[in-house]
Length: 428
Image 1 (cartoon, rainbow, N blue to C red):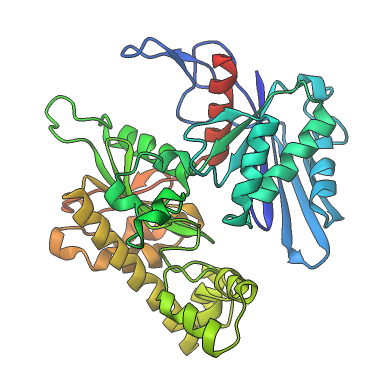
Image 2: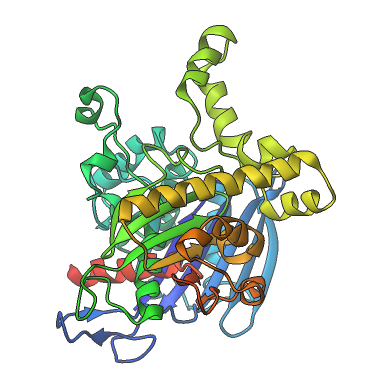
């Protein structure tokens, strides 16, 4: 079965084609002893084809890069309009030097990462008009992501035909059963009754990383054998968007993002949590509008807003190393807020079996990992400086005498989307 996974971001589009065969093996299907059901493996096979569109390099231009498992590559500049760029990207699957299939009919299904499923969708579902309508309604609180996912669904239907099944895989689904004490905001209870609650995001990444952490530690997620408590993890998903989650037994107990992906940690261009009184002050006293505040909080804050350099941690670190005082402050603030939230999640879990870093910053910035972990020496967390500096994938970078493993895990959101798509299609 050939499954195309589409992962739409606000300024990028990542896509991969996987072949999932119905046979035992790393790229196939295996039967678990406990459940007696067919599952795909956790570790991803090498994709047949992978593509990325980047709208952030130059205004008015989308840059497409394609690579196949046979070594073919393609780079092309495309019109910036999203649906036109997506159509050009998908067409490379069967046309041009990087083609890997003979035509659209070889694609058996398409999975889409959808950031916000709201209250209506607590698991992955086939795409129907009802589903797209719900995703559209949630776009008001995920305006950077949900419309991009809908664009992908429309292009796929146009190019592959209405008979090709599509599956929506929701980031919010992983957090759907978070305890009410964590999910309900301390405003009027009527807010909760109206659907205003903490949803949480990055759930596809958290699902993969929690399963992979258990595998690396040789543990089951649930309480089994000599382990009388479920596996307790704090996972730090740090990229342009940043969040933490406290996970016990493979289930979300708490997370830093909330009603929207803006709450919580300081991010690349998003503010994270701020005093809501600041916003009412700006509305009343400084003539701000809802739209201007949304733009400020989403696009002009975070690392970019404080450093004045960039929302990219690599650029902030380079400026910091040259003595730029605002870059120094931006880095220090990022680490301070990260430590603050790790401490909160530690208290929520009542103990910790592993601290996990993932995402672009989490996987590739030893400086951020070191800064975060330094504050937790009092509970015995210690990094091995040499291991940490190497930023290895799927490895423990803690010192041998650390009380808690510190894992760096390469998240595999695209594979999880494909895996979920495969599961839904098999279920029928």
